[in-house]
Length: 149
Length: 249
Image 1: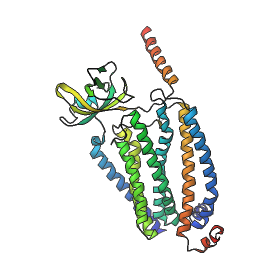
Image 2: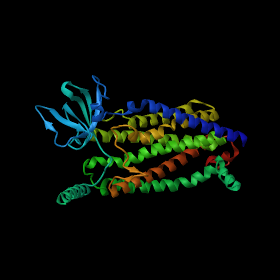
Image 3: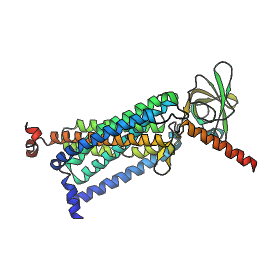
Image 4: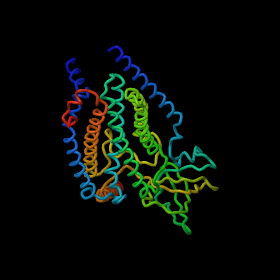
């Protein structure tokens, strides 16, 4: 019985120590574990300049311009700041305005982010199309209703 | 209190657990077959199309339950390993042994189906974000656990080494689970959570839960039948094994 309690004590102490060590490591790595930088972080110069990094956010509604040849221009926003992006290539199916996106590339001259890869980021919402329609309709009516007041 | 303790310890003996496991396997196996059949039918024919992803989203009915199982089986394995270390019970290590291949399989299925979903939806088979990378580490932990146990000939020492590996690896589980909230990842956040409810259509959620229960039943059935083999192999020199009807034949 005595030896069993001792082993249990060792086990708990070991797990607590391990947990603390992991927490310290993760804390130290913190933002290095993030897959992308937000437009706000880019505006605040937290993203590496002159290096390749990833920029993530929403494609700003109304900003999508399909330019000459295959070059696409759009703005990535986090509803606080925005970064203009330029990309030449094929976009994933889920890419559209208002949808999450992650672009990999580097800042070019004049503050435009030149992407060499664009991935669509999906959110955690899954619903049938009828529900989505009803939701957007209710949203429009709600907004219209607010106008009347 | 004391009598209850003794009751539980009775089943920590391989000789009493072996026939109990044998009786339970068909029940869980049958439940798994029914639940997975119903779940797959609902996945393909009942659940509605997603408003944005179309039909391709249906892969989550396999992907999400496998990912849940991959994490949950690891926790159960670590608990058995801890019990084995503390109480020196032979059966605990055998249970951990029996669970590892199933856990590894579900981890692989989660990664594989995730890649199939990622290509059309994200535009990439694989990215090194926190969620995907930590799940890949989980697969390596399972493989490492099995390799370490297999590499040591003395079963007592093999069990102890495996148990320590399993317990050290358990820190990875909260990292996998919370990776999507702690850091920016390409992988989306959880659609179903205990605290925040679900952000899925009701039929989609029910289908996914049926699949999850099916995978649970499958895991239990497979782990129990595998632990029976492990028991027979390790206890082959004992008289109770020699007296078993299926061994004497």
